Length: 123
Image (cartoon, rainbow, N blue to C red; front, side, top):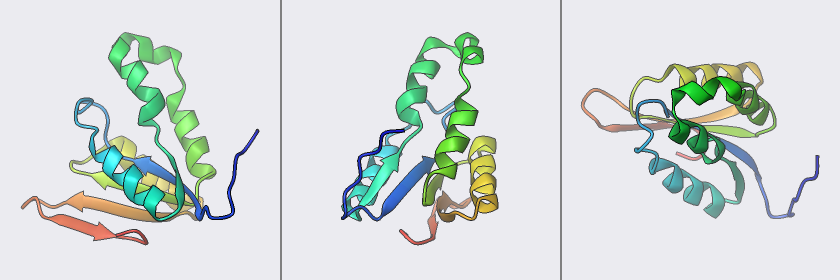
């Protein structure tokens, strides 16, 4: 695999967050990407490849192995940045996998009163 790396890059961050049923609510990813890049991280955002799949409809999803690709990206990242405005099985699975792989995580979620709750190295 060809890699482009600079000396000032701190590492790679994988952005995790719910996609299904909030396909039009993915703008939070731009904020996360901006913050991570400002702090010197390369960002891996699975939404960049998966938005094409979701725009084609659920029937076409069977032809794509995006879960395996996401897990491979998590395996190759340094920090998983998770945003959970609502419960998401996929985000929970990615957090669990990152923990199993010994990755750092930065979890941002909202409680029932919609107050932000932050934890982790970037929060």
